[in-house]
Length: 365
Ligand code: AMP
Image (cartoon, rainbow, N blue to C red):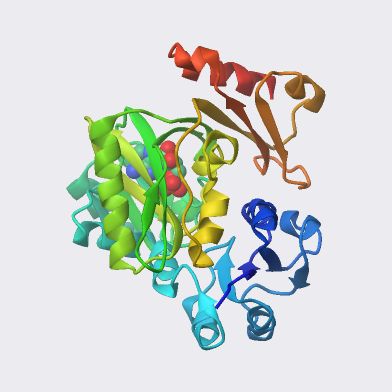
């Protein structure tokens, strides 16, 4: 059966970029979101309603050949009935595991993928014990619904425990040993239902306040690349995954420590729109629509810089040679991801000045 109508739960910027990637392939996306002004609703049809509302999800499934996600936190219970109505890709199990940091780490460990030492925390006494057992500093995080650094508290020493507890204390937390990383990298790949896999080159990512600021790609390191692909492949296979999957890692003493996975297209893969033969958005659609996966070959060196909180001077950036500009059509709010730009084949990067160059760009934005 030809799959060409894609229903997408959530109409954020990821959905918007999926819809835009779909049109040239003859794939049409339709969205479910609370807001008719959401980024993807500006470029494709939308059903407005709650993301976990059974009737709205059923309506979305009814007009879709395959269902996928811009927002991965939808409850498994809301998804299960949809599996009888349409294809749900990636599979529910992948969403469920990625919704809980503890389950995610358990999966990584079962697949022999290294993770930070950690402990489940449901009370303050447990946190005190965990800091003693696992050591300090560490990061206290909510197991569920944390994103872009929200629901996290850096516990620098024992004197910070009270403040950490006051900030996010309660049941359903995880304490992780702080990783003294030299870098953060991520891998994005796609898997088809037939088991075909493709992997993008590694991206080196710089976060500030828990939010991705910029990525430089390809980040070339054969050893790390091989390990990252092996790990991503293991996760994909174990979940019978279909679609794009990303894993973020810390590089600690030359080894990868998995931080988290995203069962969807990922911010650190936005550079692939202009930087690769086939973007992560197109490959996600190809994978979930049973089409052959496209080449992930990089076309040169790129830097992707997020626009957070306010959009930069568009004219100024557009006057730069080789810069691709993306405005998600969102209302500005402090810290909100409003858009990004990708700088292509940056000559400075080829001279290994990539980080300095991207930092300069951040100052302009
Ligand atoms: P997360 O929401 O888990 O992706 O965390 C957001 C960012 O916070 C990461 O990309 C890191 O920069 C930082 N971070 C989170 N957990 C740790 C950790 N255990 N050690 C060091 N840095 C961390």
